[in-house]
Amino acid sequence: MDHVQIAEKVDEAAVFAWLKTYISNVLGMDQASIKGSDGLDSLGLDSALTTALAMDLETWLGVEIPLAILFEAETLDNIATGVAREAERQHATAG
Amino acid sequence: MKTEQPDYGGSMAAVQYHYDVSRDFYRLWLDESLTYSSALWEGEDDTLAAAQQRKIDHHLREARADKAESLLDVGCGWGALVRKASSYSGLKRIVGLTLSEDQADNVRSFGIPQIEVRLESWTQHKPDRPYDSIISVGAFEHFAKPEDSREVKIETYRDFFATCSKWLTPGGRMSLQTFVYGTMRNEEASQFINEEIFPAADLPRLDEIAAAADGVMEVTYLVNHRLHYARTYDAWARNLRRRRDEAVKLVGETVTERYERYLKQTSIGFYTGKIGLLRISLRPTDRPVSETSRM
Image 1 (cartoon, rainbow over the protein chains, first blue to last red):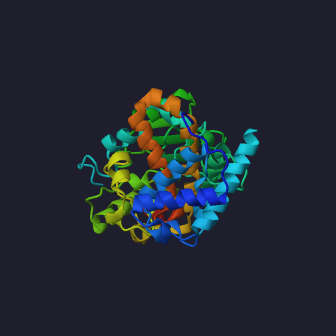
Image 2: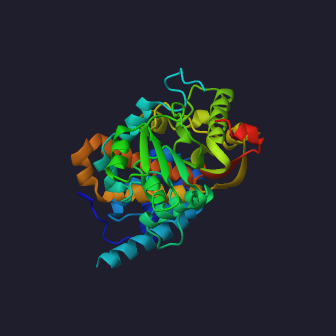
Image 3: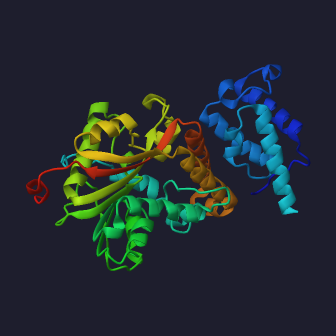
């Protein structure tokens, strides 16, 4: 991947904050109204917006995030956990 | 068969739009066999190449290729399936149909004498002898056009089943794999996918396939493997992203970006169930011997 700004240290909280900001921007929602128990689908992200989110998330993290991680999780909290774990795993593998 | 309509049963211009971008471009993100359809995955550590071969083996098994002398592949792509079929010593005659010149060239380049590749649609194909096995992977979804009514779609699919049934020997078997609309209504179908990626195609629905096969072919196996295709599309998306720089050199930034988005978005469509992936095994409905001997 080219010209990627790699996030220094990502934990669940950082991923959740990123998701909240991103979703509030694309859907024009108040950040405070987005909860960890919400799901991508229930918030109203269609497949085009979810595609953009997945690609931008990878660019932000500088690692590949299998879509399975986004879809095996029901809630934003669970997505944040899965994504942070995957990013950690890939950074560890890359040394 | 209504061969007088130039686009009936699959538009050549539409197929070439999608598949003749450049073989080298597809080579960047497909597996080495250039299989451009859903894999059949097993376990977490599976590889795309192994999962594609497993899918090919599934269709060869379902079409009973091990007992066959002749096999037809409708929509043979770059030839991974016909190539694998040529390893069956009993198979003396393997015919692949494609509408893409580039795909036909690739199959010819194998130089395998029992394989014949033909640049024609199933509506133009006139076999002089029946086949023991028919396989069609990723072609059925190109048969109907967006403007076709449900009745016209069913009629087209029924024509396909009747044609295949007529081409099969009495004990012959068919194995089919196709995209279908899942929880998505036709009119919700992403404009982006329909217009930019697969122009002039409309996906089938399970009920349309069932109605079309009714009385013509019996469905002996049917599964919706949408998560297998979700994983396949995501694997392709990640392959393309890894080799993005090479892709941009080959096809430019715009096409690369269009494919990145299409691969991810289609994967998401399968994950959410908006689209499905059916693998279906069929056999001709029993008929009198006098009928089966008349080709």
